[in-house]
Amino acid sequence: MKIIRSPSAMTAWSEGLRREGVRIGLVPTMGALHDGHRALIRAARLRCDALAVSIFVNPTQFGPREDLTKYPRHISRDRALCRKEGVDVCFEPTAEAMYPERFQTIVTLPTIARRWEGEVRPHHFSGVATVVTKLFGIVRPQISYFGQKDFQQSALVRQLVEDLNLGVTIVVGSTVREKDGLALSSRNVYLSPDDRVRAVTLYRSLQAGADVIRRGVRAGKVIQTAMHRVVKAEPSMAVDYLVVCNPHTLEPLSMVTGKAVLLGAVRLGPVRLIDNLLVTAF
Ligand code: AMP
Image (cartoon, rainbow, N blue to C red; front, side, top):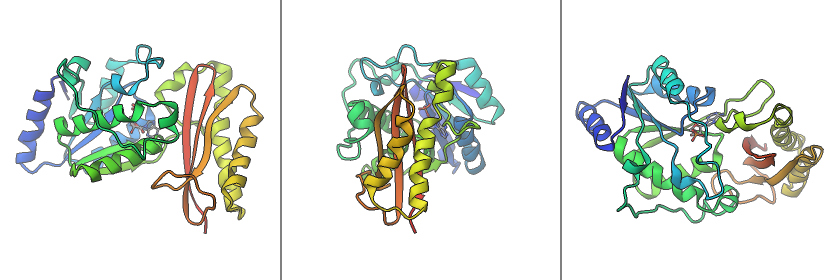
């Protein structure tokens, strides 16, 4: 497995392969890899001839009071995971190489980034959209893999690719969970043992929403009340949002008539948890 740090060397590697008709896959990550990342890497490995995983803790998607400096970094463990999964290149650029002093372009998607995560983290999605655009420009993959865990992010990436004609096929992999249902996240290591037990309440609240839909409830408000009720039973958990939305536009639904996504974000001590469930009302 190659470790490439310079963007121009990364592009040279890809361009050489593209000329030979090789199908290149990219799994963008911020490192601290877990089984959720592993599942994306495995899915990509099956479908791509050459596979790059980027490991870059992107400073532009962190707010000033967020955890950029404390974000978990385990580069040798990450490289070992990538090597074991048959990754061809770990692309590990520095922040200086990605954002040199003269850098000024910002990519924004005002509508899809407006609500939910966008409200709580105002600059987050322009940071994500900008770095994804850059990674696609540098790595030039034909296919790239994202996790449903970050539902709004994957919707934004699909929109970005369509709007800017980036020519990358986006595959969204299902959320990988712990045995109790908690979605895996690099930030789960911040949870205290007690909070780790409580953390599953978010998933349970989404399940409660899905249950009432299965039982025939269609009114958005009633579904949301069912989700809130579960979280309210856990006083140490504060809700940022718990909503039922159209899975394409991410606008809230007053009535669920077909596919919907239940989106949730809560705070538990110093940790923010996000999760979602896709549901269909028949
Ligand atoms: P991150 O390193 O947190 O930026 O995540 C890199 C990619 O892995 C993103 O596309 C995430 O949505 C995806 N991902 C993170 N957690 C999970 C999970 N539990 N299951 C599936 N994919 C995930």
